[in-house]
Length: 91
Image (cartoon, rainbow, N blue to C red; front, side, top):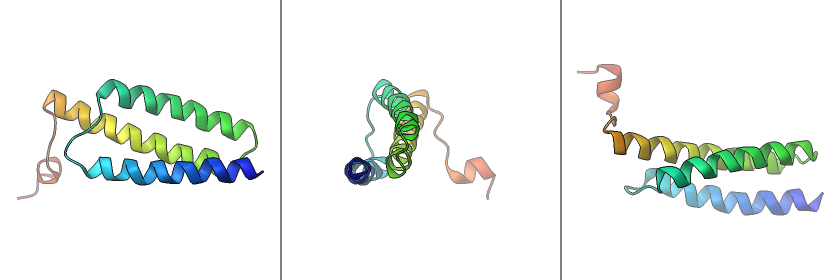
């Protein structure tokens, strides 16, 4: 289906934009990230039930990126941000 390719192409642009945000200093609001990741997860499953191939995969990647943004901002707000050294007890 041509729709699968169009949706996937749009999602690739979202993936690029979200990837930049994952490494940026400022993050979207926690609620925005949570609601978007949940909604996209449901959308990904819906695309899968329609028999699409690339759309569920690309939407799942967007879901994952939004979830990462949620975790990053949640940790920042709650002061739980740890460095790799702290997590793995490196000297």
